[in-house]
Length: 441
Image (tube, rainbow, N blue to C red; front, side):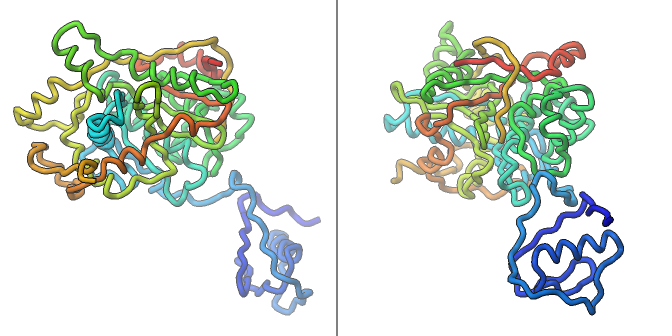
């Protein structure tokens, strides 16, 4: 009996004028699918056909590759590159910091034109991270994880999160797969382990439940909220997101608080949240309101940031009017200092409603441009930074990240958010080995 082919070998077939055996070089063009398979099977049993073998002529019909989840491939070190705003080196091409201050400028312009009444944004440490060629089509969950990690490692309210996320291996697409498998060996998420079986070096999709496991197993508090929507009414989830970003909005107890509350666009200290539905996930970085109409602002890992927007965001990066202090240290001009004294500020926290239960899994014209010039009095840019953008279309900025609630048409959604409480104790980590969530309907 022939030995079965090794699971470590995958055969991919393409439509070509000729087809040669990748092991012995024999021309297999005239062989059908079964004959090719038999030829390769023979290699594994040391009975490969020689050059004098004959085969019946057959029309070439390509085989479909095996399930991507079982693909074995060499992993490149570049697949685990990671960057956050606390680093001085140039961000990789698919990493874009500075978008939150740019969104604020765009929203302020829209407010001046009567198109936005009020808007709230997450912390300026948020970074858009897009998929690349190697993970396109399956990497959105991983990239949302990197966006959350980049924000958590740059925020200042819980500095102990940084070492928890940085070691023993830093965040990365492939590293995350190892994180999750390591959590499984510690007893986390037995249900997920039985479903996925193996993650490392595969292209399996993951969802917010897996991100919950990754963060809580490292000691970083994270919570899940499940939404079951009746008649696809988005009101419960929109209300929750609005409450999340505004719960800690400043109260008008003094002049400074009144100035903050009066600002039509507020950058908060809130971490971005991950919104998952069947087949896709995105990172919510804020929302805008006009009357009763709410539109969400999201970083979609499957959509790259247009280059002119990225250049403008990088140019604004060091001059952010952010709620939280930037990790970089600069000598500020009096004008910039005055701006930062009046910047919006919010303390950490989050809201949750509903009953707790085991989480269900969800897989997988001129007025419109800004000129960045010396009047902005930005600190001297990092010597590694890309050249400043001179003009960016603010209308295009909003269109790139704006998501109308009417476009959310699924009946089930899951949110992952960070309450920003102290790191989990060993006992608290043990209590989170079973994935649970709050349920809202």
